[in-house]
Image 1: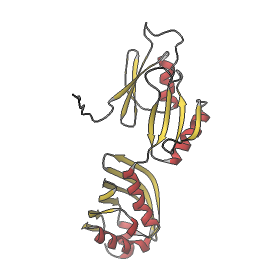
Image 2: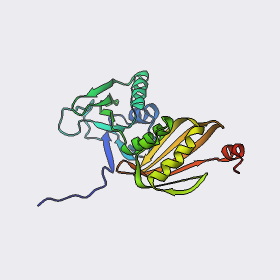
Image 3: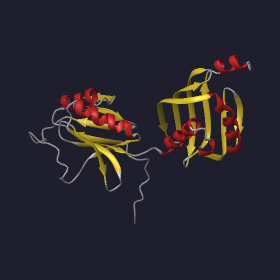
Image 4: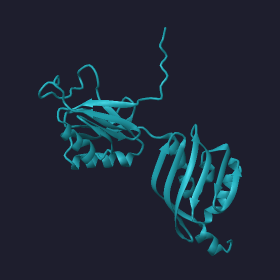
Length: 246
């Protein structure tokens, strides 16, 4: 009879190091992962929402031991990367820091790009392209604004939209009608950062308008690749003052 384990995924991964101080310098100072906890002969860092524990050597740790991906056990650890530019940036930064790495390569099995690298104990890591479908839906939203094609934005039929300039609008058609009216004042959208957790995505950006540059922060809820809720946050004063609607 199957055990049928129910789990929310990986809680943490534990690694063994031959030199804890050297490993700490690599993961924290070189790669820049934040420390979550430190204790005697151990430290924990966070890679996204996953905790990695690194333990120092014990009496049973063989002298001069090094990781070998061909032994039974761990082969490598892969971190998800949602942005091709970030993958290239990491590859360049690893090379600049003299960290052994492959550069950006293509995995023919899944047709995905990755960069593989090793820590001081030669534990194998990868940054592996794994696009966030929720972020992609939000990217399509901004691309629709840029290209002035709001019909291409993946709204759910019952989506809702609420901004500082409008009460709550419900329905994909009504939202697109509103956005069409706003398009004449939008010159460009300059994204600074995407944040994604669960079905929520946030974007920090500058909205380049005919009234000037307006810093903005938009929050979205995405389900099955469709935007079901959108809430833009920005100071409406530059728009209301110049249009006389305040």
